[in-house]
Each structure stands twice: as structure tokens, then as C-alpha cells.
Image (cartoon, rainbow, N blue to C red; front, side, top):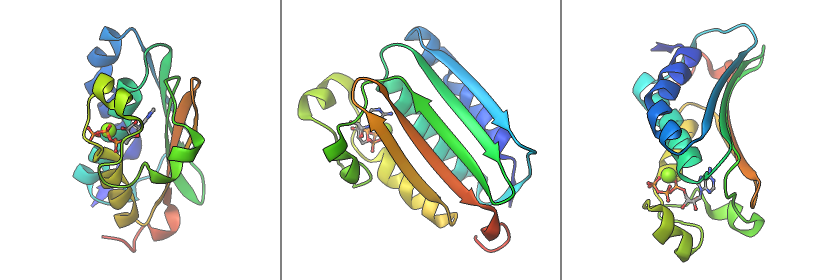
Amino acid sequence: EWIDLSQLAEQAVRRVELKAKEKGLQLKLQLSGDAYMIRGDQKRMEQIIMNLLENAIRYTDEGEIIVHVEFTADAATLIVEDTGIGIPEEELPYIFERFYRVEKSRSRQYGGSGLGLSIVKKLVELHGGKIRMMSQPGAGTRCEVQLLNLSKSEYM
Ligand code: ATP
Ligand code: MG
């Protein structure tokens, strides 16, 4: 199935607009490069974007969330960036594990079950992609999902 990543990102942003507004967060969508279709599963790709966006909103108390879709010759990259509470460096290696949640006190405050990112990682890998999470406690988090153009016609 061919998917339009920019359009999916746009739809996802629209779906969480109200939630972001209620928290007083700015929500921005940036598209760069000449868009092309990528091969994959539309529903699963939606799940990837929505999970990342929901995390960004849940773990951000003020500031902004930026969704960036970038197309280059080698890869389509989806970036979800927030100005939220961040993740301590020593916990970053574990956040893709099932049921892993950063700090118990935080879990009580923000809710969640610790499954979202483990699912996201599996789905990204199913698409032949790579996921990276960068974060600075108190400053924000940036998640990059790279979908290699190379696998355009190979996966799924
Ligand atoms: P679920 O997604 O299953 O509802 P969850 O959000 O707790 O629950 P994950 O999405 O897997 O679980 O995230 C794992 C942990 O990583 C979270 O508990 C949270 O502490 C941390 N985390 C994830 N995304 C962010 C983010 N954007 N900013 C700060 N911390 C984050
Ligand atoms: Mg989550």
C-alpha cells in the first residue's frame, strides 16, 4: 500500500489539535523536501504518528510540539519534537521496552501503561525503518523515525 506521509501527519495533527489547545500547547506541522509516497501500512503508520504525538502532548506542560516531515533522496523522516519534561539520559536506553515507564511518581502524574513506544518501535521496524529518541530533562524530547527510501518497494 502506498502512503502519503505528509497527509497522515496533517491528519494526526488535526486529531490532537483540541487536546493540545486544552493544555495551552502550540502545535506546528512542517513539511520539507519534495514529498513522495512511501510503501507501508497506512493504519500502522497512523499508529506510529499518533503514539508519538500523544506522548509529546502528555509529557509537555508548556511550549510547543513540532511535527516535521522531511523528504530527501535517501529517506523520509518523521520528527516529533516537544518542549516537555524530557527523559533522563540513563533511562533513554529502556524506553522502548514493554511496560517501561520513567519514574514512578511521574507515572502517577501523567498516566499511561508504558506500551506505546514498544509498539511504535516494532511498527517502525516492520517498515524497515529506524527510530531514535533524543532528550534533555526539563528541555524537551525529539523522536526521529527514519523510513528508508531504499525499502520503498521491499517491505510489507
Ligand atoms: P502508553 O503509551 O502505553 O499509554 P506511556 O506513554 O507511559 O504509556 P510509552 O509511550 O511507551 O508509555 O513511553 C514510555 C515512557 O517514556 C513514558 O512513561 C514516559 O516516561 C517516557 N516518554 C515517552 N515519550 C516522552 C516524551 N515525549 N517526553 C518525556 N517522556 C516521554
Ligand atoms: Mg505513550
